[in-house]
Image (cartoon, rainbow, N blue to C red; front, side, top):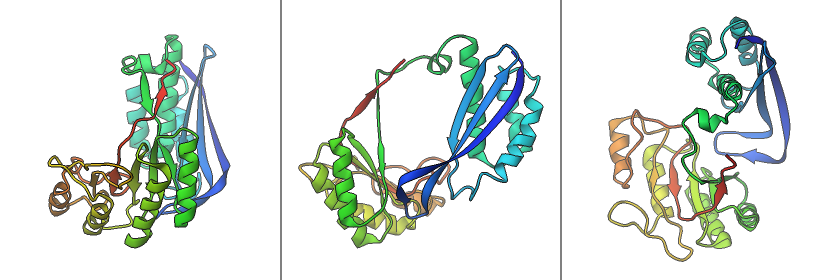
Amino acid sequence: MKISHVELIPHRLKRKIRWQTASYSADSLQLFYVKLHTENELTGIGAASILPTRAASFEPGLAAIRSATQSFVRRDADQIDTLMSELDRVVPDFAYHKVAIEIALFDLAAKAQNISVAELLGGKKREQIPVLKMLGMGTVEWMAERARQFAERGYRHLKVKLGAGKEKDLASFMAIREKVGPGVTLTADFNGAYDSATAIRVIEKLTPGRSDDGRAACSGNRSCGHGRGDRSCSTSHSRRSIDQLGRRCISGGATQSGARSQHQAPQTWRHPC
């Protein structure tokens, strides 16, 4: 199955509500779509969101990907590892753009076998997958009301964007907990706003109850959970400090999204496969 044409489609989608985190704000989403066409008329489709913090525009990533993927034409589409390794060598940056290419290759491979991508990757492992809704930063009142609306719509997992300062974060988090009640999981995401020591202090304020294994003892509408320092988690001292909260830092250092604190609850999405 030979690739005949690579189609790259950048698209800017206007947001209904301005998005705000501690690291960036945006009025729109930069969406990047990829279509890989084959000689036997199959099309693999991939998509990714290009974060403003990673690229202010689709360029120059789009130009780099467009140039590099010309070598995909007349190549075997099922050679996913080979094609992506070559793309990584030619274009070492722009990971978000490359994700869309890889997704399109997997989609094409699954379509060629007339199976789902889930089956291609090993088969369905669970009947339900939890859905998490992100809640951007705003005033205390706005965030609490927005959280209530999400909970009313059925969301049982919310990622709350914080990082506006210790007192403001605590006020927002407590107001949200009061609005949604104890049945909704809350995950606090500081988006790298704090160093590890500050993140730990904030998390401790959000997590007043903790059991022996480091997990929060939650009851009623208390804010509680377990957490890790994140972008600051790049030194052995940072890792040891965060381990004191009862959760080990991810091996290798930093992760992508900021220190977090996690809370209880169960809403799930039924897998369509």
